[in-house]
Every structure is written in C-alpha cells, then in structure tokens.
Figure 1 (cartoon, rainbow, N blue to C red):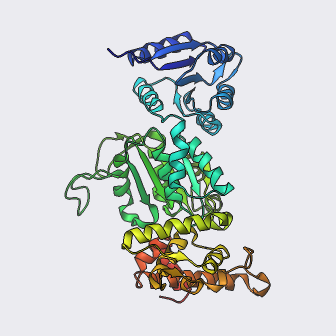
Figure 2: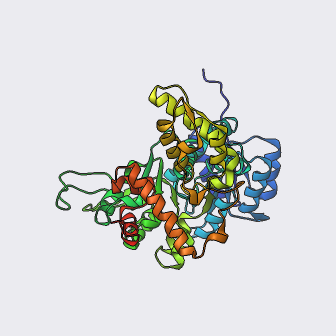
Figure 3: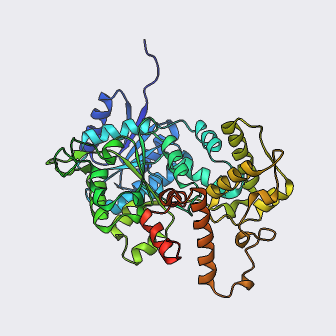
Length: 448
C-alpha cells in the first residue's frame, strides 16, 4: 500500500468558479489542494503549510499575484509559482516570469495545459542537487562564475525564455544545456540548432518539417526541429543570423505554440522551452532593423550573460588542468604539465576566443611539447593579445583602431583556417560564424 503523502498545491483566486475548477482538476490528479481568496489568506497558509506548487491569479482583492511571487521568492525560492492571467495579457505574464514565476496560464484556463504545467512543475529537482551538478560541469571559482551558477540554478526552475549573451567561445551552449538538464524537462530532448548554418531556402522545412511531395526532394514526411524538441528544449544558437522572413514564422510558432509543416494542412501543437544565444548585440540588431523587435521581446524575457575568460582570469589554471587531464585521457599519454612561465603567459593572454581558444591552444601545445612539459613557446600565443600583468594590450601603440581590430580578426581567421587545413566550413564553425559571414570576412580581408 502506498502511504506517501500527497503533494500539496496552493490555489489563490478570488473567483469561486475558478477555484472549484482547479480543485476538481487537481484532485483528479491525486493532489491535495488548499485555497485562498486573497493575498493575506495565501500568506497565512504559506506560513502554516509546505507546498509543492502555487497557482495564483494576477488580480487579487488586496494585492497582486506579482506581490505573492516576490513574497515566495524571499521566503521559499524553490517553490514554483504559476501565474493565471487574463487572455492577451502577455506583458503581465512576462513581468511574472521576470519576477521568478515558473510559468503562466491564460484565462479561460485550458485543462490539458493546466495538467501539463502542474506535472512539469512537480518534476522539478529538489533544491539540494542543483548547485552540485552545475559545479561539476561549469568549472571555476571566480565571482563571475559563482554568479552565473546561481542564475542557472534559478532559471532551471522556470519555463521563461532565456536569451544567453556572450562572446564566441565563452560556453553559451553549455549554459543552455545546464538550464535544460537541471529543470523539469531534463528527461526530454535538448535540440541545439545553429541558425547561421541552415541555408535560407531550407529553414522553414528544418524548423517545422515537411510533407512528402511538398517540394522537389521531399521523398518522405520529415518532422522539424520544433517537433523533435517537443516536451523539451529548443536551443537557437546564433539566432541573430535568422533572415527576417524566418523571424516572422518563428514568432508565430512561439506565440501559437503550434507549427505547420511545409505542405501540411493542419497545425501541430508543440510544447518547447525556447533558449537562444548569439555573440552579436541583439539590441543593436533590432536598432539596425535586422532583427524584429516583437521577436526580440519574446526571446529576451530574461537575459543571462556568460562572462568572457578575460573577466575570470583566476579560473584559467583550473580550466587548463581540466583540459590537460582530458587530453591525456583521450590520447592515452601521460598528463602534460604546464611550466610556471607557460601558466603565467596564459593568465596574461586576452583570449578573444575565450574557453574554446584556450582548449585549442592547449591541444596544440600538448602535441608540440617535449618531455610532457608545456613551455611558454609551445603555446604560440598571438603577441597582439598578450598583456602585461593582466592589463589590456598597450593601446598607446595603436594608431588606428579599425586597422588594429582588422589585424586581430585576420590572425584569428588564419589560425582557424590553419587548424582546420583550410576547410572554410570547419573554420567558420570553430569561430562560431555562419558560412556566409565567414565568406564575407575572407573577401573583406583579401583571404579568398
């Protein structure tokens, strides 16, 4: 006989009909419900009972649902709260997500959506295991990394869309994976897609799928990325590279939570959490009218910035040791050690390519070094990005900023091309560039 206690749900709404509907639906899910008519009653119940989920209306007789979210965030931040808002109140829902709400429902409440939300919230991991799991994957003891881990811990418990910003090579996809793996969708698919790597003429088919015979070459039905990520997370990397025509279709899919495959007659409901990233300044792309403002607001509900390696130099030694251990394991050779001068050189390097560049530098040095000791000269660091005592490069020697930046760009591209044996596609991927962007840069720099 199962004697485990039933999970408890707090319902906060001043409308008797809504309370009754929620109580009946959740009761059929074998959940124990407690009801409050206003903010005061809810706060009193929260003092007396431990709850597994709170469902609250936005408008309450003596306050707002946002106030309740903030109250719970202060007292029990690991208690998920779902906001119930009037139909069309998207701005209210977004404000709730920013305040820390897990998710939101719109009135009239659709029971399948309610059951789906409740089931998802109750699958959240317990508070104890989150930080430990994140620490194992996200190395570094610096303050910027401590802050990042704390934010990932919080965002993993939400269903809010997250815009992950940061420089190329800083680890944006790893951050996205951690948000997914520490949340209620962890057992469902995580589908990453590089938006800059899909040819524009195939984008709609890739994202939404196609039906057999819908175009030349469509020899069978094929599900798209949205369908593949159903129940899980869709990670849109380099989202700024999407053409405007595709941005419109993406916005509609996010708003309607449904997609129509190319050649299809009916829409398919999809349940995905959207995470996106780009190394570009997305707000600047909006200002330049290269990115739709309405899509920007849907994707950028919460921004999570990943620090560059320059901002966390104290982590370089731990990262380097981790990379060398992995290289030793992969190659079957004894682990190489860093000469103190080599470590100092790494700490004084600007790393425009961030953690990805550190990995590439050490992989090359691991191959070149003798007697399993990596000397400073084995690193082959670009002199233009070497600094003294961790300071910026000597800008007094820079006569023309454009020329200086162009020389840095040229060195990085040439390095990527050499490391990939001049495979332009592979070099573009290594630099997190779309092939189109890579081709433009090669032409601009006279390297084509």
